[in-house]
Image (cartoon, rainbow, N blue to C red):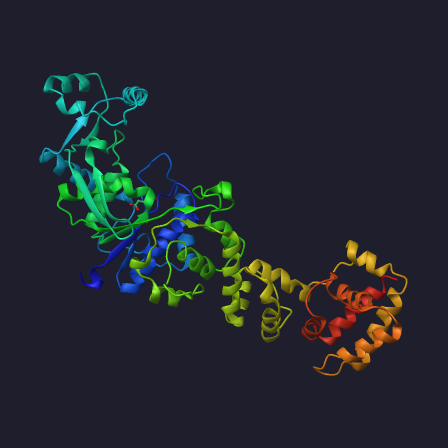
Length: 477
Ligand code: GLU
């Protein structure tokens, strides 16, 4: 296969927000396409009329764009094989259903959902796996007429003959399925919409999808799709079913484990690069010890062969760590722009100076939100109302110390050289401990007794601002 013929797709159902699990599926598909120079298709699977919502569709597109997963064909970027919204392809599905019918591969089934349900319960009670018993295959013309006259609604079922369907999966190896386990299945519902299985098979076939990379929860659907591909004369794609992402308790990752939507992490200020990096590691490794990757490195190093079969555990601490590492490897100007794009207003500070401040505080931040609040100290005067401030200012010598501090900084702080030694001699001559002396300066500047080194913080804040804040603190007395 030529690399240009490699076509993968991400096919979300717009029944909810994009979450970590399906974002990872999108990322693997995108990385694979970008690595080999193939095409990445986005297809919206919105045939579930009850649960699909336009607002989810919009959010999914927005999140994918934010993650930088650009698609070569899909909504808002039509290609040769569109439309890419299943709800706009109904005629195509009807046409293929007609072809199957003409070849005698389908039939109408009039069993009502109540009947099916009671048979399912009966089967369960007997301890047998529930499956359709194919009874409507045997309807006579007379039976059919009676159903139609009675106004019974029909679904279209695809005939399944007993056989063993084998697939080669990049992650699972050879997997074999016994078709006897599932019986004739529905390809068109009574509401006139195709089922998920049918729409997927028609679309993967017509869109010439060469590799289906998706969650393991779809593995059991694969034999149905293979039967449909064959029946419609489509090439059968290669498969890679990704293990599920689990929470730390070993259960499948869900809201129970905390936030799972991409929108949440985006709001929290995680860099899309951090999500891309961390999610790429859930089920794939580069083979060496590298864990921090730029987008370009990932597209160079990704390979479908290195997808691992064991389940991946979502570890919030590790994700946080990846966040800090990504923030550290970013250019300062890029971080400044991202902060500004998020609406952080640092317009009072010049860009160069702001970038120095970002460089100073970024070690402590995993997200843009954290970075923004670390920077706040430079733009927002501290309220001196906190318990730690009140306690420090109530000490009997607080005022005297602050005045001495102000005096030293006013007179001994020349240009860039912060007067570390003079401060230390001042502390000694007052006869107070460092633990009493320095926190007063830090609290006056930041509102907190603990935080960045004063010798780094003060020069960044600037002499004028430092003295102003000290004076303000002195007014407290
Ligand atoms: N629409 C399906 C889902 O959101 C994906 C189908 C597929 O990848 O084959 O789970």
